[in-house]
Amino acid sequence: MKGIEVYETGKFRYREDLPTPEPGPGQIRIHIQAAGICGTDVHILKGDPSLDAMMNYPVVLGHEFCGVVDKLGEGVEGPAVGSYVSAEMHEWCDRCPACLAGKYHACQFTEIHGLTKDGCFAEFIVLPARNVVELPRDLPIKGGAILDPLGNAVHTALKCEVKDRNVLLIGYGPIGAMAAEVLNFEGAKRIWITDVNAKALARARTWIETQSLEDRVVILDVSGNGHGKAHDLILEESGGGADVVLEFSGHPAGINDAFSLVRAAGDVVLLGLPKDSDVTIQDFGKNVIFKGVTAHAIIGREIFATWDKLQDLHKRGFDIARMVTGEYALEDFETALHLFANGEEQKVVLYPAGLPT
Image 1 (tube, rainbow, N blue to C red):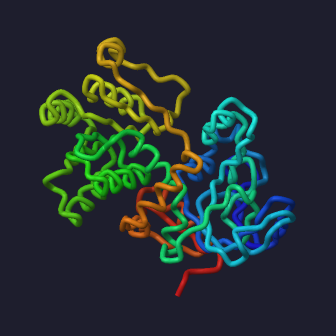
Image 2 (tube, helix red, strand yellow; image 1 turned 180 degrees about the vertical axis):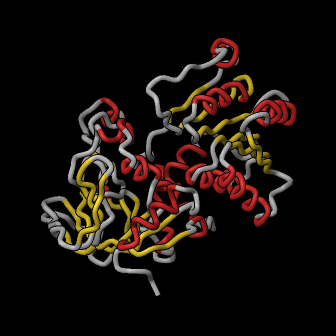
């Protein structure tokens, strides 16, 4: 079968001779229809040390996809062959404290497809039947392909109540952009979006213009001298700090902004992953302890509560497919990766069987 294989640190190759996997007992084989490129894939191919230590080379890359059930392994009753599906790409152990507490997304011994096991940048993938999620037929495949990252955005954005509340979103990358859509859809009262990247800021401004959100959403450039002005504006407009702060950048400055710009007894929700192992929190007593802040660390999707929320958003009219900006054949992976990594595309989907007509 065709696929994108990472064979050593930072190196990949397009292959047409990968063995087609066969499902074992309790497993399902899925014929992949579409797959999304994630920021994690970019970091893997840059040789990020924290991810490189997790990789099991050689391995098929990719962990965002949708497809059609192709074959059932022994003892599997469903989803039936022909079902339209996606899947949770974290395999949990069922024995660690997190799993025993029902927090499978935080499993201590999780295996992740696209890192430790073969992923979805290929024609077929085999997964445990318990990981597979049936999708509604009216969801376009380019939308079905990005439910994994959208799940991260939903888990983060809806960790706390956001309806009729003031929310600060730090970092308008692909996941931050998805979270902004969720905040708007769920009725956040006012949204401030901060970033330092000119392309990200331009996309954010285009979003509020096309959606006519100028009365509810404010875009702020926090690079250079703009940082202090943005800080003062948010504190003034919110009356002392945002009710909820969502941190997607992972940058120490962004993490510190999250704690300094949340109101007393507010919530800080952290998804962004810092490059370095240590982050210094400035004015810790003032910005954390004496405020009585609640901090929430987000990893992946809550299994399967977040998937249920994704289905509910779709049923209520949330346009998932609209967030995809680029579509490419699997053979054009290198081009798609370059455009995505350089911020030319906000969200990219690959098609193993070629671009749909």
